[in-house]
Image 1 (cartoon, rainbow, N blue to C red):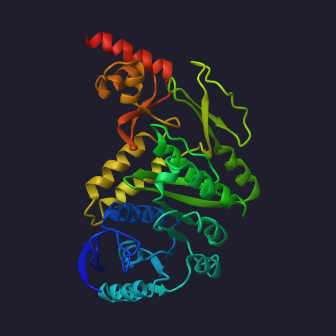
Image 2: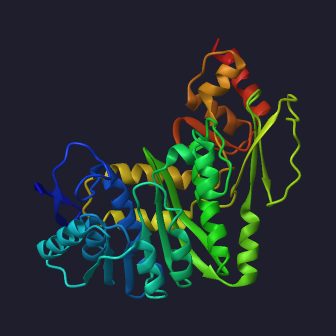
Image 3: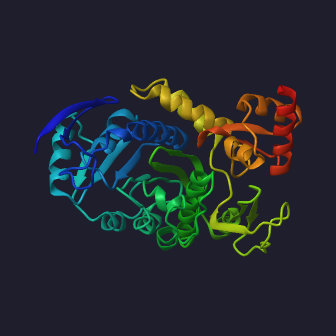
Length: 386
């Protein structure tokens, strides 16, 4: 196998040479996920500071070993990192990379991902699931295995299903109907979180989302696990549905698993399309993200600027309502050109509304103004500018 050496964070890693990123590569490695790995190091470091004891980490799809090796080398207090892959070439390459980085706290396993989680029940403080495609096949084993007060980190790259391009796969894998809307990436992320919450609930465990994001071709969530039937039941009240009207762009969030949802939009009488169940609760913990930012200043990251930019936006949108408005879509609905986004934001604030940018889209905003109020703001602004 042809290979090359790359440097990422504080590690040196031997990776396979191949022209195209594909699951058919002899050992899977994706350079585009460096930001994902940088943020993961920061998030698990923040978790380690909060629990204030040494931790054990399991990366169940290790590939070259880069993710787990970075955790072991860059996070203070990782007592043990278990990295796993069913591919024998990946196992051998991971062992080489452990030697390259002179680590003695990393163990390599060659197991089916579900089996290693079941065999090691209660032994890990952090479980990282970063597969090529959907994580849905592995969440059940993680829920059974991960102890209370642990952290689950999950990546999904099947965004075409979660975002509504293909409805049936989303229903099949996540038990939810997606919405193909201008805010489809938020819908998809919330469907993923809702699915995880429902699976963990079967074990009387609940999730507290600390950080989540949708970036390029993937979605990623970090959640801390709590335990207890009463608290789990309470957390499930954050599940619900979104009703969307394509005619006027109105949207309404309905919390509860069995809400009464009208068939027609109360604004224009258009037909509602309903997505869910999905997570309607918090997607960011501001204090946790601020701690991540502090930690990033002490790390060696190639993607430090990108990581900080993403975290800054997420801090601001932490208290924002569910869904966002894509301004060009709203203006097209109004049959007018879009005024500058910053002017819309300023006028919304002047009128007393909450407003923030969103990491999901650079041409969108989150606000507690409803669709009619937002449209009136845009119309007023157009008149002022003319």
